[in-house]
Image (cartoon, rainbow over all chains, first blue to last red; front, side, top):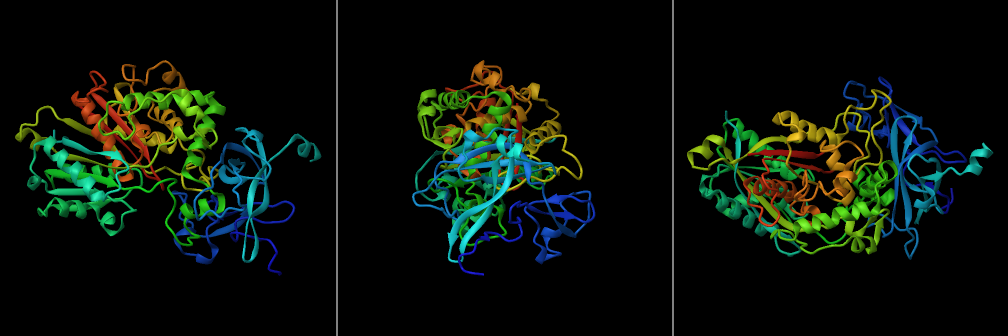
Length: 158
Length: 395
């Protein structure tokens, strides 16, 4: 691996490649899904106990979530957020944010893909998961999952 | 029947004073004791609202205020529940009074806050969602408020003008409030021409952070009777319930909701449950409420709260607003104090300040902003990590 290769800014939250997906934890007893995933390295730690109050499970397995979901709501960040946010550019360029409801009954917050803003979004609109560069640090490009509006053309292409 | 009465209330004016939080807290405490006509030496419990930005003295706020007032042997407690800190402190005092373990309790919250966006504590904290939301997403508090605001627009037809009208109303309500930080008329045009922070919210849609302090003196109704406190405002309920799984509305500072796949969606959202628990505890219904103080961190959030408290049906808060029902003189005035729009948020003091305002309203002492004939008032607020509160007061 070279120092310039892109790596996820956080490990174990999403897959990369052409069709990236979010990684959730699924309780082996009741199938409840949790995102962000519970840390597997800390089995027996609080994070591993199932959050469903009717379930006493404490084991989770990693599962992929659906790539596409419906926008629950959306906004943008017109001003540079404070640290620990690391701006990707100087001067700062605003970006959009969306909360997206997946078929698994979970709403996941994420930035919106580069080049898309609030005018490209609506509540109920379809988006899909992509992986893009969040910022660059001493190890190279650090990537993050983002939501990209599904346009008519990409839908037809599928 | 035994109950809990509000013997006295007091505040230190909200502002950016740049002084120590203890000073504000003692000012408010002394004002509340004077209002009650109860000497400090009669107080046998002090509950402080913790402030997390003022070092060790803030972590042990109950002790800090007790010492500053002069050690009197009272027991102490300190509460932290994010924005609901003050209500949890009130609940702690109420519980000891109801249990017969205490006769007179002083509850104090005070804060000194930094300028700009509230940011998380320093350091690399990869397991802390409050840190991760900034690092991974750049998700500020106003961005969460904006998500809720946008949803109202797309689902219920709310407009930027509606949100601005909430600010216009609250600015007018707060004009004569001596404890409000901002006492100035604001026009719809002022709001709409202020910078967009997070679409669709403008700078003037979002509350500031302030220095301030609020205090209440609580006592048993027996104590009130013995000391000639006639017809006091009663604490009818304090709700500090947590969410019921699955919490399906995205909550600050989380990156995702619970999944509803395993057990289905809950009967009530978290914010609906906060108010419902207060109504059930008091045996009072939303139709009995005369006045409400709700947490308008943003203008749009006030509209959400009106519905969460069942003061109208879901999606109809704009109708109430537009018809003037939520203005003083209307059917159900909301935020007669001026709300956070006129105060700015002083976290550990804010839920106590809501109770101070309703006490003045129910006593008929809210000069210049009085809701005539108010007998029942409700507060509502929500903070990080499953905290929230609703206090019902009645006279």
